[in-house]
Each structure stands twice: as structure tokens, then as C-alpha cells.
Length: 85
Image 1 (spheres, rainbow, N blue to C red):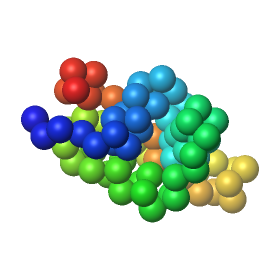
Image 2 (image 1 turned 180 degrees about the vertical axis):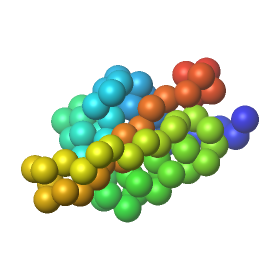
Image 3 (image 1 turned 180 degrees about the horizontal axis):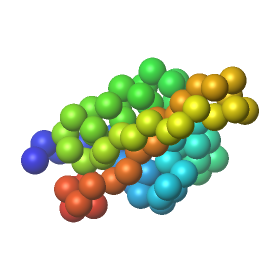
Image 4 (image 1 turned 30 degrees about the horizontal axis):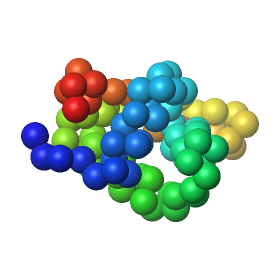
């Protein structure tokens, strides 16, 4: 398996920590509170998509959420390979 960058590893561990509440904004918030660095959404979603392509995460789309004007959230879940990595 290809080595992960520090950023990818951090996002992977954050998804593991947040469990069923791991979506883009919550991941970004947790990382910024933990290491006091704010990552741009482009960096976040690029890394998350790469982790999905590598098979370390899966992505599911929620039902529309009324508070968000009917928009959906992309939730991320860690796979067995992701835990092993």
C-alpha cells in the first residue's frame, strides 16, 4: 500500500474518531480545534476523495437535511483497510 501523507493520515484518524458524525464540516472543525490549523475545503475534500479511491474510506450521502435548505451531507466511514493503514 502507498504511504499516506501526514494530512491524509490526520483526516483518516479524524474519521475514525468521529465515527457516524464524520462529514466535511465536522472533520474540518475537529482538525482545526485539535491542531489549531484550518485546512481549506478543497484540501479536505481532495484528501477525502483520494482516501475513498484508495479504499480506506467509504462515502455515503444522507437524505436531504431541512436545516441546510434540503442539501445532503457526504458522510465518511473507515474501512478495514483504513483501520489497518
